[in-house]
Amino acid sequence: MGGMEQTPAWAGALIEQFGALRADMTALRGDVVALRADMTALRGDMATQADLAALRAEMATKADLGDLATHAELDTLNANLQALRLDLLARIDRLQEALTQQQQQSVVNHAIASRARDAMRGIEEEVSALTRMVMRLSRRLDDIEGREAGH
Image (spheres, rainbow, N blue to C red):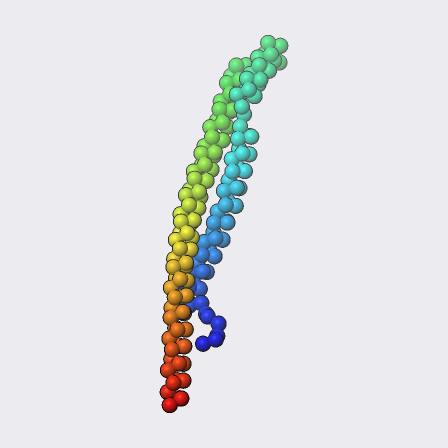
Protein backbone atom coordinates (compact mmCIF):
# COMPACT_ATOMS: atom_id res chain seq x y z
CA MET A 1 0.00 0.00 0.00
CA GLY A 2 3.02 2.31 -0.42
CA GLY A 3 1.86 3.57 -3.88
CA MET A 4 0.73 7.11 -4.68
CA GLU A 5 -2.91 8.08 -4.20
CA GLN A 6 -4.72 8.79 -7.45
CA THR A 7 -7.38 11.44 -7.86
CA PRO A 8 -10.76 9.85 -8.67
CA ALA A 9 -12.14 10.66 -12.13
CA TRP A 10 -15.09 12.61 -10.72
CA ALA A 11 -12.72 14.77 -8.65
CA GLY A 12 -10.60 15.40 -11.74
CA ALA A 13 -13.72 16.46 -13.63
CA LEU A 14 -14.62 18.89 -10.84
CA ILE A 15 -11.11 20.30 -10.91
CA GLU A 16 -11.37 20.80 -14.70
CA GLN A 17 -14.75 22.49 -14.31
CA PHE A 18 -13.31 24.77 -11.65
CA GLY A 19 -10.44 25.69 -13.99
CA ALA A 20 -12.90 26.44 -16.78
CA LEU A 21 -14.94 28.67 -14.43
CA ARG A 22 -11.77 30.54 -13.49
CA ALA A 23 -10.93 31.08 -17.17
CA ASP A 24 -14.49 32.31 -17.83
CA MET A 25 -14.26 34.75 -14.92
CA THR A 26 -10.93 36.07 -16.21
CA ALA A 27 -12.44 36.59 -19.66
CA LEU A 28 -15.44 38.37 -18.14
CA ARG A 29 -13.15 40.67 -16.19
CA GLY A 30 -11.39 41.55 -19.46
CA ASP A 31 -14.74 42.27 -21.10
CA VAL A 32 -15.76 44.51 -18.18
CA VAL A 33 -12.53 46.49 -18.51
CA ALA A 34 -13.11 46.87 -22.27
CA LEU A 35 -16.70 48.01 -21.71
CA ARG A 36 -15.58 50.58 -19.15
CA ALA A 37 -13.01 51.91 -21.60
CA ASP A 38 -15.70 52.15 -24.31
CA MET A 39 -18.00 54.03 -21.94
CA THR A 40 -15.22 56.44 -21.01
CA ALA A 41 -14.50 57.07 -24.69
CA LEU A 42 -18.17 57.71 -25.41
CA ARG A 43 -18.45 60.13 -22.52
CA GLY A 44 -15.42 61.95 -23.86
CA ASP A 45 -17.12 62.25 -27.26
CA MET A 46 -20.26 63.81 -25.85
CA ALA A 47 -20.53 67.55 -26.16
CA THR A 48 -20.66 69.16 -22.75
CA GLN A 49 -22.98 71.98 -21.87
CA ALA A 50 -19.99 74.32 -21.79
CA ASP A 51 -19.02 73.32 -25.34
CA LEU A 52 -22.57 73.93 -26.49
CA ALA A 53 -22.69 77.33 -24.77
CA ALA A 54 -19.37 78.32 -26.36
CA LEU A 55 -20.66 77.24 -29.78
CA ARG A 56 -23.84 79.25 -29.30
CA ALA A 57 -21.82 82.30 -28.29
CA GLU A 58 -19.61 81.89 -31.35
CA MET A 59 -22.67 81.52 -33.57
CA ALA A 60 -24.27 84.59 -32.04
CA THR A 61 -21.08 86.58 -32.63
CA LYS A 62 -20.88 85.45 -36.24
CA ALA A 63 -24.57 86.15 -36.72
CA ASP A 64 -24.02 89.64 -35.39
CA LEU A 65 -21.21 90.08 -37.90
CA GLY A 66 -23.33 88.79 -40.72
CA ASP A 67 -21.01 85.76 -41.29
CA LEU A 68 -23.54 83.14 -40.29
CA ALA A 69 -26.60 82.45 -42.35
CA THR A 70 -30.08 82.09 -40.95
CA HIS A 71 -31.67 80.90 -37.76
CA ALA A 72 -32.82 77.82 -39.70
CA GLU A 73 -29.21 76.70 -40.02
CA LEU A 74 -28.72 77.25 -36.30
CA ASP A 75 -31.83 75.23 -35.56
CA THR A 76 -30.58 72.44 -37.84
CA LEU A 77 -27.18 72.46 -36.15
CA ASN A 78 -28.81 72.43 -32.71
CA ALA A 79 -31.10 69.56 -33.75
CA ASN A 80 -28.12 67.61 -35.06
CA LEU A 81 -26.22 68.16 -31.81
CA GLN A 82 -29.25 67.04 -29.80
CA ALA A 83 -29.64 63.91 -31.97
CA LEU A 84 -25.96 63.09 -31.49
CA ARG A 85 -26.30 63.57 -27.72
CA LEU A 86 -29.32 61.24 -27.59
CA ASP A 87 -27.51 58.63 -29.71
CA LEU A 88 -24.49 58.73 -27.43
CA LEU A 89 -26.64 58.47 -24.31
CA ALA A 90 -28.44 55.45 -25.81
CA ARG A 91 -25.09 53.81 -26.56
CA ILE A 92 -23.91 54.47 -23.01
CA ASP A 93 -27.13 52.93 -21.66
CA ARG A 94 -26.61 49.80 -23.79
CA LEU A 95 -23.01 49.50 -22.64
CA GLN A 96 -24.07 49.98 -19.02
CA GLU A 97 -26.66 47.22 -19.38
CA ALA A 98 -24.07 44.90 -20.92
CA LEU A 99 -21.66 45.72 -18.11
CA THR A 100 -24.34 45.04 -15.50
CA GLN A 101 -25.16 41.69 -17.11
CA GLN A 102 -21.51 40.70 -17.15
CA GLN A 103 -21.09 41.72 -13.53
CA GLN A 104 -24.13 39.63 -12.60
CA GLN A 105 -22.73 36.68 -14.55
CA SER A 106 -19.40 37.16 -12.79
CA VAL A 107 -21.15 37.02 -9.41
CA VAL A 108 -22.97 33.83 -10.42
CA ASN A 109 -19.73 32.25 -11.69
CA HIS A 110 -17.96 33.23 -8.49
CA ALA A 111 -20.71 31.61 -6.42
CA ILE A 112 -20.49 28.43 -8.53
CA ALA A 113 -16.71 28.36 -8.15
CA SER A 114 -17.04 28.89 -4.40
CA ARG A 115 -19.51 26.01 -4.11
CA ALA A 116 -17.20 23.82 -6.20
CA ARG A 117 -14.27 24.68 -3.91
CA ASP A 118 -16.36 23.84 -0.85
CA ALA A 119 -17.47 20.58 -2.44
CA MET A 120 -13.87 19.72 -3.34
CA ARG A 121 -12.76 20.38 0.26
CA GLY A 122 -15.48 18.05 1.52
CA ILE A 123 -14.56 15.42 -1.04
CA GLU A 124 -10.86 15.74 -0.21
CA GLU A 125 -11.67 15.22 3.47
CA GLU A 126 -13.76 12.13 2.65
CA VAL A 127 -11.05 10.69 0.39
CA SER A 128 -8.45 11.35 3.07
CA ALA A 129 -10.59 9.67 5.74
CA LEU A 130 -11.26 6.69 3.45
CA THR A 131 -7.56 6.43 2.60
CA ARG A 132 -6.64 6.38 6.29
CA MET A 133 -9.31 3.73 6.92
CA VAL A 134 -8.02 1.56 4.06
CA MET A 135 -4.45 1.93 5.34
CA ARG A 136 -5.51 0.88 8.86
CA LEU A 137 -7.42 -2.11 7.48
CA SER A 138 -4.44 -3.02 5.32
CA ARG A 139 -2.12 -2.95 8.34
CA ARG A 140 -4.58 -5.04 10.34
CA LEU A 141 -4.81 -7.53 7.48
CA ASP A 142 -1.01 -7.67 7.27
CA ASP A 143 -0.89 -8.27 11.07
CA ILE A 144 -3.50 -11.03 10.83
CA GLU A 145 -1.73 -12.69 7.90
CA GLY A 146 1.57 -12.42 9.81
CA ARG A 147 0.08 -14.15 12.85
CA GLU A 148 -1.39 -16.94 10.78
CA ALA A 149 1.93 -17.47 9.03
CA GLY A 150 3.67 -17.63 12.43
CA HIS A 151 1.53 -20.50 13.73
